Image (tube, rainbow, N blue to C red; front, side, top):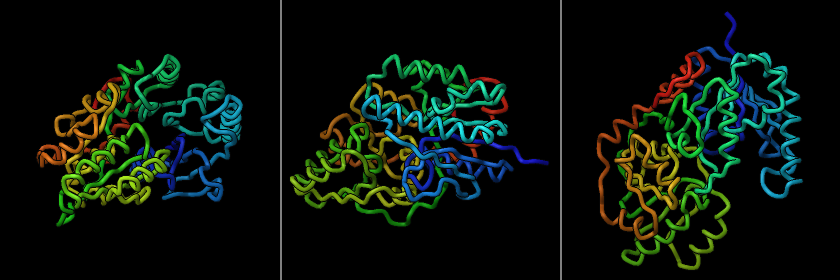
Amino acid sequence: MPKKSIVQLAPFYFPHLGGVEKHLLKVNRELQQRGYDIAVITQQHLPDLPLKEKVEGSVVIRLKTSGGSHGSWIRKTKYKLSIWQGVFNHLPLLRKAEIIQIHDVFFWLLPFLVFLPRKKLFMTFHGYEGGEKIGSRQRFWHQLASKLTQNNLCIGAFHQRWYGVQPGQISYGAVATRPTPPKKQPRRRLVFIGRLHPDTGIMAHLEALKILQNKNPKYRLDVYGDGPQMPVAAAYTKKHRLNAVFHGFSHKTEELVGKYQVAFVSGYLSILEALAAKTLPICFYDNNLRKEYLESTPFSQWLIKASNPRQIAQAVLNDEQLHQKAVSWAKKQSWTKLTNNYQQLWYQTKSSSSN
């Protein structure tokens, strides 16, 4: 019996690090065990990466791009044309696929829908496009993608109110069940996991560290991540002589977070990893969208939410403990369960359900 074939389109894929990349890599492992042939079409984010190779059994096809997704109109136009040229070159693969799963990048396929009649197209809406000001343009593209695909999986329930997208399935990610390290770091040893970006509040966390160190100089922050705010974060750390160490991105965040009693995390995946590892998550928000992102989850009651540096610092000083119910719930959110969500998406009619 021939294997079922799936083509996934995603902005980036392993070895690029990030929540979407981990989500896709883990789900693909599960799908292969269930007898699927997997191909991933993504961007060549480093020039020395091969344009085609196998990664853990999945065929990864990387598109060369020019211009950029940000900047001038000319730069963005060059970028879109290079993406479309790359996708066009792989139309035979897309036409042979039983299922096409698109992760956020619906525009990649838009010019080619006429060549894919009756093809099973599905969307995963992963996150939000930074900040609270979601305009009519973002809402239009999300709603268009929803209408022109058979079904969708939303990472989080906030998509419905903020983007006007009716979820077919709702998920908050998944974790691998791992034994908790026998000994955690002292509570004054903290960890930040995520992109160094205004959305994740790296500067607010560094300001909180400054407050904590004024009370006890033994507080330390390990930072696992990188991003556009790295220069300003490093400069602020040096200026105020903060005990913060920047380790860069790591693909072992599930193992790392379990070594700490308290973690500064912002994305669903890293929050779940913290809960499953019996680590108290302190989550930053600075606008109503970000607040709803956290509060509209089944695990909201187990999170410590803070909107400024003083609240972050106070949350650390309060010495709150994580509820065992949070640990139990998080450990049930397996990659097997998330993969089941995808199969329900592909083979059932539209209906909303939650992970």
